[in-house]
Image 1: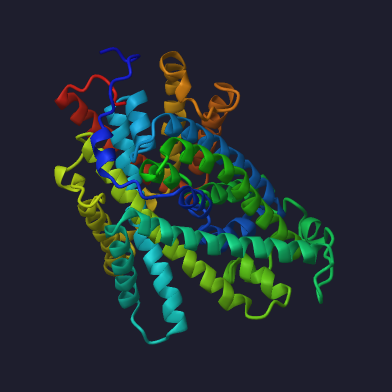
Image 2: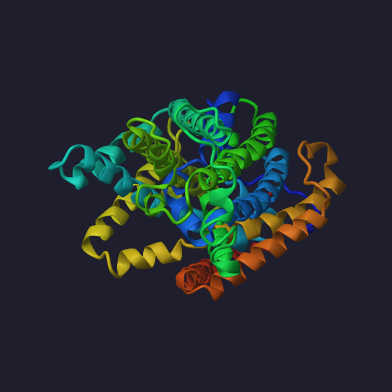
Length: 467
């Protein structure tokens, strides 16, 4: 069979065994809430410290890149919904080795992230309840969300719906308070004008190097949107669901991220130590004299971490199930009972718990190695998405143009621009001492997976991609 002929989907049997319990409201909130995590609420402080007020430009540039990536992914996922999402698309476009590499790299990223989120959530709980062991909170959270994902998929959808609603509500409230303060309409707060944007070194206080560091921090803060295209395969109307979720999520998330950064650097001096120590949101609310700001934001951050744990266990289990359905993983992981890949859920949760244990046993070597290997995986995944869309768009236009419910803007120009942008980010990571080791670690992992995937492809004589 030629590469231009679209063969029947090899993942279809797995998809039909998975339950289709997610509604449109679930998908919309998963798309909105999946990317609003602790990386935004707390981690953005490092970007502000490096870039100063120009962090707004950094988030705008990285947000544009993410919007292009999501548009490409939305086009492919609406044309061919699959629980393996970009892994399936990479296999169809490039070959089985590409699907293997993108899929297992993403699974690895999600599992390590589950462990990191569990540690972060446990540290908040021990701050509230001193004397309680951190490991007990980690075990409790892992047990709860493993149990949630072992149940029907609609339970996962409901958890994420309410988690995301709370996070979105917190962002909207923050933006509303910020706009009132900036315009001088907030009681007790004086309008700052442009003093914080142009003072203390100006808009670019650390020059272009600071902007680059801020840009790198902002790129990785956007990770998480991909989960919605994985979840779409288990929705009631996969094609319409993913199309609507991707369309509405992109501009809203851009407003949340860029708007938040603009409010923060307008109201608070970028070099205020509280921005890095407390997190930019808490620092801003404290600066405005909002009562109990710190504890309120800690609740929001805890919700963000628990939401991310829930979503990452879900995404990891579905990606593993998809890979097994395409004969690219241990068959046991693909067992589906009651519409849920329970073995994949258990294994993904167990790997996440192992990462937590490694953070205690070997924090200086093994755990740091894990962190470095996942540092740029999301960029590798985005690169596969860009190359896959470049190939599959032409094939779909030729063979089934009616499937193009979502279309990439100005194809192929903006696809090539996005790929050039990703290449530029890779180059910037290589130039920065803080991110060079992460890039090298991710490179080693990616090359190892690509070699394993290619060897598997050769052994099975798989000369054509999957559909």
